[in-house]
Amino acid sequence: MTTVINDVKTYNLYINGEWVSPISESYFDVISPATGQVVSKAALGDEQDTKRAIDAAAAAFPEWSAKTGRERAEILTRLYQLMIENSEQLAKSISVEMGKPIQQARGEVMNAAEYVLWNLEEGKRVSGEVIPGAVKNRRLQVIRQPIGPVAAITPWNFPLGMVTRKLAPALAAGCTVVLKPAEQTPGSAILFFELAEKAGIPKGVINLVTGTPQQIGDALLSDKRIRKITFTGSTNVGKQLLRKAADQVKRVSMELGGHAPFIVFEDADLEHTIEQLARCKFQNCGQTCISANRIYVQESIKDQFLSLLKEKAESLRVGNGLEKGVDVGPLVSKAGLNKVEEQVNNAVEQGAKLVTGGEKYEVEGHEEGYFYKPTILADVQDTMMIATNETFGPVAPIFTFKTEEEVVAKANDTDYGLAAYCFTKDLSRSVRVSEALEYGMVGINDTVLSQVEGPFGGIKESGMGREGGTDGLADFLEKKFISTII
Ligand code: ADP
Image (cartoon, rainbow, N blue to C red; front, top):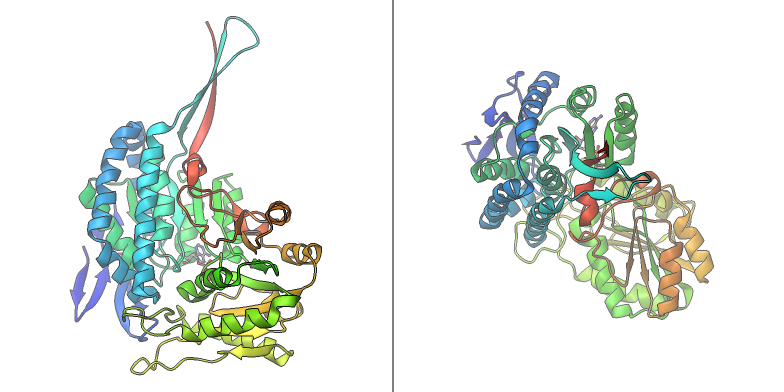
């Protein structure tokens, strides 16, 4: 279990139903991005720890997968209830380690719990097919079975949401799991595992290893007993994992980077558009893979749009996410802050106009925090770094366009294909544009794409597989075709 010394928690590994120290006996620091202080220490697990976790997941698989969907749902219902009962503690852990404002962390916890609820329901309805055969004495059927033990690797930007998006469907489908949460934010995942233990998830069914990413990743990918890897993170790391998964033809789900275009036509409801854009761009300090990264505004409304967005951006309060009334927290790390500064400086050097922000934000008493002002850049050109690289920060780069055809071509001119947005009141145009955009998800006058009922995921280099909806569970099941002569 977690121990606390001088307010600094120490997290162990969770293997085969027990909290155990890592073989290395070493722990690494988890830093608050708002204060720069150490808030916890997490176990430095390695290949050997990971192997023990895989042993446990493999041993637990036969019994867990043999349970009925309803039996698994009963345990997962208790887990859902425990998440709701402990939501404030979960939210606090997210906010402290990752920096997001506490009200956004609360939203993440509710969304994370919903993935458990949705999937436990779906898990009761895993049905097969009976297919009419070509000859009389043959009977054809398809059954669906859990893939096997699964490896899950999650990022820091939604430290709990990304865990349940993967673990809830895996568990409901009958798979067992080894999870490696991001090193920046292990706390809420650890707490979730404590709740899962209380809920009665049998030993070995879920296992958690923190530590050196590559060592853990290699141990998971080189072990034949792991039948699938589900990953959310950067396209770069996703490609490395894909290559390694290919050696054993492991099943893969990849939620990778994005470079979302946000298109505003001159007939859009501007007030609504600005509200949605501010939410999409500045929530989580811009650190989401579906954040608006390239904002295309039709030329005729540029000035009005900029003045409204400026007013909105300047009204946002930056600060420690735990404080009341804060809208934008710090970036997660110094590296994250440096990347934002580099992209903004590069754009300004090449002629972009700084409408607001463009510098670090000093928060009194938080001199070590990674704060950056909500920033708007106008006159952004396609040659600037920000036009092609994912930003992951509170920076809104504004491009202009003249025609629908031109903006659709620009929006699609990227290797990414996760999320895109289109704001217009013209129904026909909204249909044309949503069909023409080469993205896994499109928001029409909407930016909320992470809904448990719908399939979240990307095309092109943004990944493969879907989380949510009926597809979320299906990604953890294999189909088996059975032909019988009677
Ligand atoms: P970010 O740059 O946003 O941190 P990453 O793709 O580096 O995104 O990280 C996402 C997750 O992938 C984290 O849990 C991280 O520890 C893990 N990770 C990073 N590199 C590797 C690797 N070589 N093998 C396995 N996991 C990795």
